[in-house]
Length: 230
Image 1 (cartoon, rainbow, N blue to C red):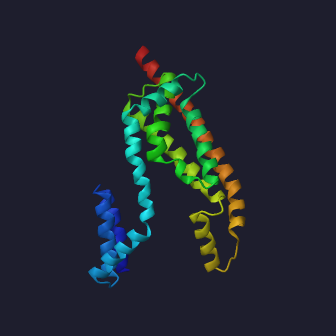
Image 2 (image 1 turned 30 degrees about the horizontal axis):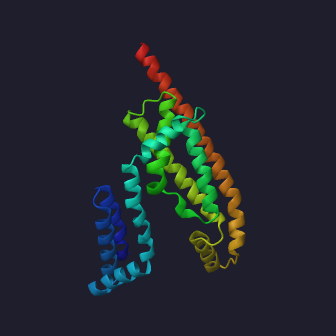
Image 3 (image 1 turned 180 degrees about the vertical axis):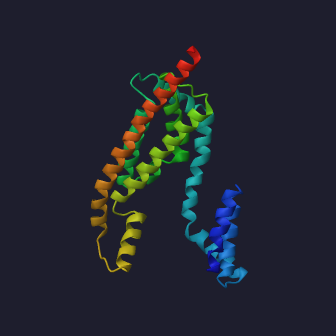
């Protein structure tokens, strides 16, 4: 049980809001040492993992581009564009993004969206602008955080349930490997096909939550109006 000390370090570190990279590194070192490996062996494993997964760092190359686009007014232009659409509401904006995110993920294009690439610079500002157009006070921190959280949830749900429809994705291969270890042999195409009903249900459920969110914002507006009038 001693190698599980890494889990305790992660939990404690995140609870204390320490630097995430430092916490994970310490957890890895502690787990390796508790498993009976020497410090050089643990460091060698860190290096091997980095080399084998170095392609993951490519996504960081997009962050400077996103930062430059935001500095040039990307968020403001996105908000202005959505404000000109009278039928746009916060829930509808996020529902459209949920549909696009799930559809592209089902085709294997999982990198087209994401919190850093899409939600923060585009989806959240558009959702906030739609809320302002409906009369919601987005200067209220609680309201603004709720809108941003729902925008992030649209990305999470769309990706999580959409990617399993694509046959050549890591999650499908993981499920197939787990089932084979337990004596159940299935083809990736079968798993992908049976992921479609789940994806449709997830879209319907979360889509309803997004549209219900519009009603929640409207109720907050009415409550605020009644309080000011009284």
